[in-house]
Length: 232
Image 1 (cartoon, rainbow, N blue to C red):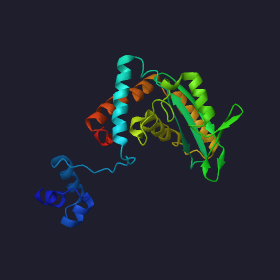
Image 2 (cartoon, helix red, strand yellow):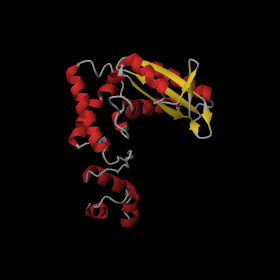
Image 3 (spheres, helix red, strand yellow):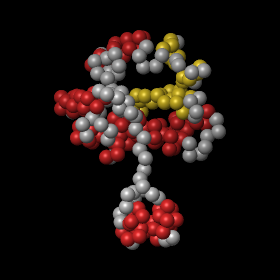
Image 4 (tube, rainbow, N blue to C red):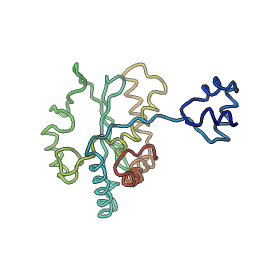
């Protein structure tokens, strides 16, 4: 035991490396590390790099969200989270939105250029994603500035913060874990899988995903706006 502990005390070597270094069988090393020394494999976590000022914006966003929840008990339940992501080597972009009770979509956009997905055609008019003037005008007419969380509105979702977006920290990971199980061989099969999986998402799953932002924001405030996923 002392030999295993001495070889792994700094946590910078693998069980295989300890085996080679000491001659102790791998299974014995593994059991000693896990059951006796309570040492576990280190997993690398990838995060978006936070730029100067991001931590301040993230803290301010957390405070603002909790304030809105105090003002309106249903505020979080009425939050519509939307995002699009490229799938299948960026040959198709899928858009999905959801609240705590319903899924909107999926909608697919296949228009491509050499630089990737650029525009989408919806009901006869074209727009660049997110911030095109006609898109912003439509959102303002439909919801008002105070009810849209986006750039060029009164409130924006913190940049470089997928750890605070239900679509990023839950939806896309869940969908990708399901839609590729049967190894779809065409875009048509992939789209069918996405449609089917969106239909299987239950209100309980949506509620849990959206409300998971609460402990995330609480942890963010405790961590002074810095990365939080290694605490979760």
